[in-house]
Image (cartoon, rainbow, N blue to C red; front, side):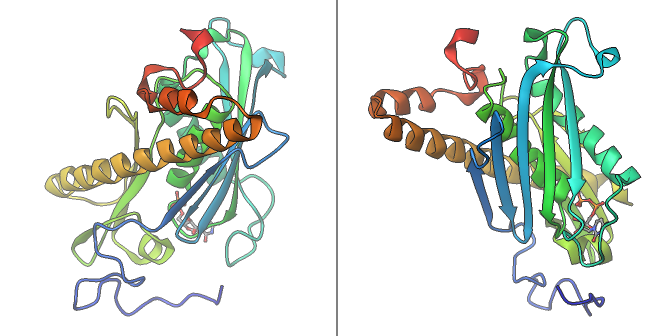
Amino acid sequence: MSPETKPDFLINPEGLRIDGRRTDEMRPIELKVGVLKQADGSASIRQGNTYILAAVYGPRELHPRHLTINDRAYLRCVYRMATFSVPDRKRPAPSRREREISMVIANALKPALFLEDYPRAVVDVFIQVIQADGGTRCAAINAASLALADAGIPMKTLVPAVAVGKAEGKLLVDLGDEEDKYGGGDVPMAMLGTTGEITLLQQDGSFAKEELVEAMGMGVTAMKYILELQKEALKSAYTKKVAVEGEELDEYEDDLETDLGEAEIAGEEDE
Ligand code: CDP
């Protein structure tokens, strides 16, 4: 990436953004499930130039033991940026920002999980940002949610996430890095795929009440779209897996058609 200079404008006279998108248009998203062999569950996401890997381990024994929660599993999320993920080398020591993002990601995902099924255990979610180009916390949630499903963690639903921001008086869906840096604000959000319950809502910059309401409406539309992509990614990974293992494909595809919100993602024995 070349050193960045502030662009002259973020929206051109035709109403298009620096990368040619309309204000309500997402960046291209590519989701892959089961990308890492060692992990119990994994996924990757490319959202524009943002590229992230998520790996899930567990449920497993929790160390250190003093973190144990008696009536449910501890969801431990660790969000880290690779030193080479940003134009200026990112210092390898965990930053305050990374710790905060780890916490908000865990809080966004927890309501989707049946953590009470695994008292005293831990579910570890490792998120590695390989390339950062805006919207990494939301892209991380999109991938982590798929990695949890891939690990067979009992879930009520998948969790899609997106950031809606503002530049030059217009609301913009799915901010890229320059829009994030030079725009007028940023509202990252996540929701439960089934109910639409909001599990992450942050705000950077100032928004009038009406703007915030409109931003959330745009975000929900985008998240519904992302949810469909997440379902497709899971379906495609498991269809391939079944084909390789030579099981009855048609039957399995029917199972995958069932509502992913009904806790069946992790397997029928949890019913
Ligand atoms: O990534 P996200 O929008 O969730 O978080 P942010 O703190 O609003 O960061 C916005 C963007 O700034 C990131 O996505 C990166 O592209 C960039 N960034 C950076 O260039 N250097 C850092 N040390 C941290 C973030």
